[in-house]
Image 1: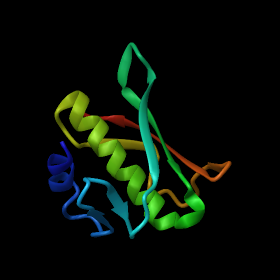
Image 2 (image 1 turned 180 degrees about the vertical axis):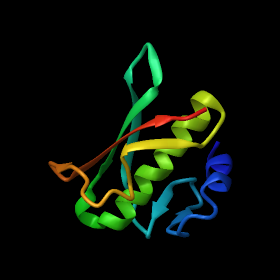
Image 3 (image 1 turned 90 degrees about the vertical axis):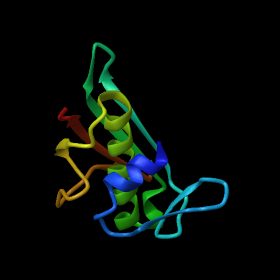
Image 4 (image 1 turned 180 degrees about the horizontal axis):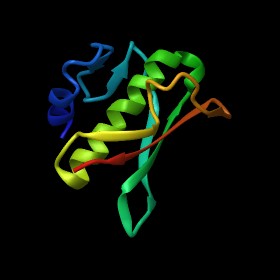
Length: 107
């Protein structure tokens, strides 16, 4: 699945790389990132968390974008995301060194 997400994000910024053990680094940083459905009855709406954002806000945003793309591909087969609070938003919520993004898969 990493290859599909890599292809889907190929035109982004080039901030992410794969290591030999398939760890994905964003600007050389290994972020902990997770996407989950807001409501299990409607998986289209999701929230992504990324930490530690203090390592690099720019790279954390890219990690969140990547995680959202993988989430939407896994559940809906497409990478199109409609962001409520996205990686390109001017202001994004950060609490306890964790970046939170929200969006909707747009299949």
